[in-house]
Image 1 (cartoon, helix red, strand yellow):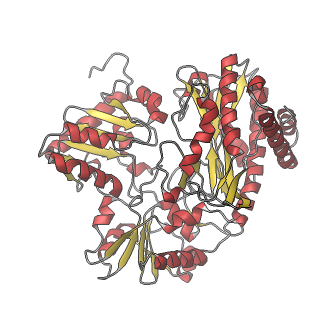
Image 2 (cartoon, one colour; image 1 turned 30 degrees about the vertical axis):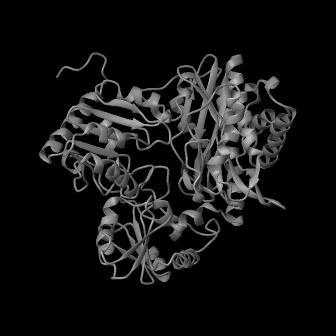
Image 3 (cartoon, rainbow, N blue to C red; image 1 turned 180 degrees about the vertical axis):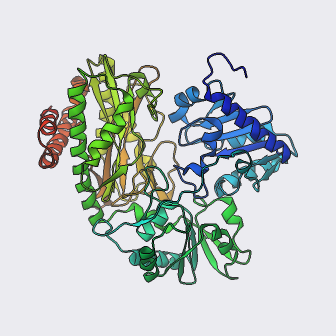
Length: 606
């Protein structure tokens, strides 16, 4: 079969897959089909079984929506992925539809505008969020369009679809698990009583893992497992595939009143809720298919899962474990950067090699389990793509002059890490140093901020952007995301983002761990991002109320060779020096040899 000149060979299969989908659509009398990046748990990162959008389009980003009609195929994604999507979608016949950050309904508006009255759009209701389904129905009704959600066309056309994961589940044990499963279940039932409910259905995997002090390996980088949970009639039922819970763990769960049922029975259990039951569900964390399965005589109460708030507020014991974890992670990073600086002048180091090297150094540290996401290592122009990933077939050699951006993290028994550093290769240019310094000023500005308890987290975004805006520059992603405790590296409810709504549930509370990661990206040239994790701490009470401040948790030097010192104020220089003094003090007991020498050199007063 002839292909477009220059088209990668994998685009042949992409075209064939889209053609197969169109054939299945025609058989079902569908005029459009929606393929979200989602599973029945609305996870950010998906088990292979549910990576339908990636399989169909070839786009490997973690967020995006594919829509296919008889004569059009488009992939909607936000600014984080535009450059990546342009590359991966080239020659596939799938158009990149640039979604303005935060305006998640653009693809819905497109469907409503391009379908004709009476036409039908299809989707798999088991992976379509309830919130999205409602937006679709709201947009379709005035246009006399129909939405069908009883059609999983992927099962028809994806013949070698990966099976559901089967890896075993393990307990997260003390001392790192600072509160028992029984305590968490009691707290949750008290929250249910406060909301006037006596049943609660949970699909979000990190909420289930947190609640039951369990961890798994069903999702790459996130220590969660595929399951649903239902609390009803003073019983807790965990719907999980048979064989995933070892016998000893089954007994431990039973001692805390947690019974097991097959994963596939979650829907039918919802349908068997007794008349008059008052069921709490989170409309942002449940799919349409599971909402439709609820018994008709049960009363549904919609609110955010109480576990979302509970797991976001780390206890003092948790924070102590996170601090210790950051020392281990910082020691690993010192060893890595010492190796990198020594190797670069004489070895041909590639971006692709960075992930394995940095993971190997982390694996030597106490409590390390796995990486918390795939390492982003981008040199010069590749660093301008915020979610760039080098592969064995496509990567750059780190040589010449420029900037190397490395965003990486680890999962430890005592916490989750996420850090971005930029290091100079050869001699950085004056403009590169200027960009680096502007980003550093944004990091410092927000890190040093004191703010009232309950401040809605999106409102803090502009503080980090202000020094960057002052130079007429901006960046297309949020400034910070919540981080889990040996759980997902992206966690709510807080988010520091100009595109997020400042809703009540985003209020900052003591104990929340959040990233601060401003950036500047110049497509085709370079990218700069500096990222630390911080925890909300009490900053005292005034006549105007209680205040919070950020304690910086991340312990790794910021490379002062990239700083344009003329752009830093005295207080900003003092912040850098104080941070480096803390890094040196905390990390020094954990390193020796080249790692210690590198640490000592990179934390000299600036």
